Structure formats: C-alpha cells, structure tokens
Image (tube, rainbow, N blue to C red):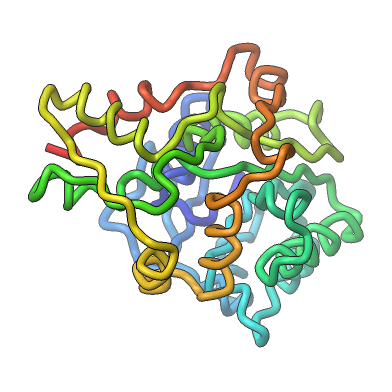
Amino acid sequence: MIVVTGATGNVGRPLTQALAQAGAQVTTVSRHAAAAAADGARHMPADLAQPQSLTAALDGAKALFLLLSGDLHAPEARPADIIDLAAASGVRRVVLLSSQGVATRPHGVSRIAMRAVEDALRESGLDWAVLRPGGFASNALAWAESVRTQQTVAAPFGDVGVPIVDPADIAQVAAACLLDDRQTGTVLELTGPEVITPRQQAQAIAAALGSPVRFHELTREQAKAAMTQSVPPALADDTLDITAAPNPAELRISPDVERVLGRTPSPFNDWVARNITAFR
C-alpha cells in the first residue's frame, strides 16, 4: 500500500493515477473527504497539521508520498512528527516533495523549515528520496479567471523567466521513486526544459486559445498582496525573491527528470494544451 498526501492537488492527482496504472494499491489523503476515490484508490480524510489523524491511513502502508502545505511552516507546526508516525506505523519509504529553494535560497524562512523536514527524513532510518522542483507550470491557473473574464494575465516581473516544471512530470518522478529503490537516498532537482517568462506564458495561453491575451505587469507589492490570500507572507516573499531575480542555480535546466523518466521534461506549451479548458 502506498499513501499519497495532497491527493487532490496538481501533483497528487496524476501521481495517484500513475501508481494505479502500475498496479499499486493506493490510499489517498486530503483534508476534506472526497466524493469518490480516484482510480480505484481508497480515500481517507486527514489533516497533516494533526499528524495523528494520519494513523488509520498509514496502517499497512509501505510507502508514503509527503506533500506539506504552506500552513505547516508556521512556527508551531511539527511536520517531522509525520515522519516519526510513518516509521512507527511500519512505512519503509518516504518520498518528500520539497523545494528547489532549499538549496538555492537556504536562508529563506520557508526554506529553513523545509530543510528541517528533509533532515528529519534523512535521520529517520527510512528509505527516502527528496524532490526539489522549481516553479510549477500549474501556477498559471491563478490567471484562469482573469483570462476567461478579461483576456488578461497579471503578474510581476514579466520578462524574468525560470524553467518551470509540469506537475505531471513531478508526479511521474515521484511514482518512480515510490515503486522501486533506484532513487533511494537521492535528492532530485526537477525543472522544465526551458526558461520561460510570465509574458511568454501568457502568449502560450493566447496561442492555445486562438484569441489575444493581454499581459499586465504587477508591482511586487501587488503580487504579494494577492499571494498572501493563500500562502503565508514569508513563503510569498521567498517566492517573489526568486521570480524577481533568479540566480544561476535557479536558471539551470536540471537533467534529473530525463534521467529518471528517460525522456525530456514537458514544456509549458504541453501543460497549456492539456489544461486549456480552464482558461476558456
């Protein structure tokens, strides 16, 4: 049995599907009860901020995909307790979704918190793999409503790009790490195949729609105000520091997706094509 946390998200959904297609038994976990378990998996609601709520889901599990939401980086949170609970429950392997910024911006508040989780996993005695993606292609979904209603994408730093990664690629790499031991004890940096700017992303959406999309550049302050509606201010600042001025490590195209999957990472255009209905 493999337990997938964050199962309703942009990584968790394709990961569940990939594991099911490989014949694995899967338990999906999310904060709210699902109407139906996807792809034949059983679903169990749990709140990762309360690790003991995972006890039933971990019963009989041999592997865990651990995705921590932003609110777990609050000072009172103890996400490492989840790793302790997994070990006590008989889990043998944990794949942690971390962040590229742990290495490239190690002094950011949210990065320090995630580094502590990585360290706890390394010291747990469990088999482990750590995934460190950069920016997600699916972050473009934040523009979906404004594209549908105003034919506009609003974002800061319009001509500053990074090699954003398709969440489906993250899911495929996670599945590989959960299903066999070839990546045990490795840290994988996951990026897309090209540096792409917000303005270029807007152009890609317009091309897929077959209609114009205007780009409106936000100030950093405007962008932070929008981001802090869904993430802690420290995480918003850490993210904006990267998108404003990526350093050479954040501009690097990592070979790790291709090394694990045997193919090049999917470009942003492919992600747009699969998700264009969200923008119509």
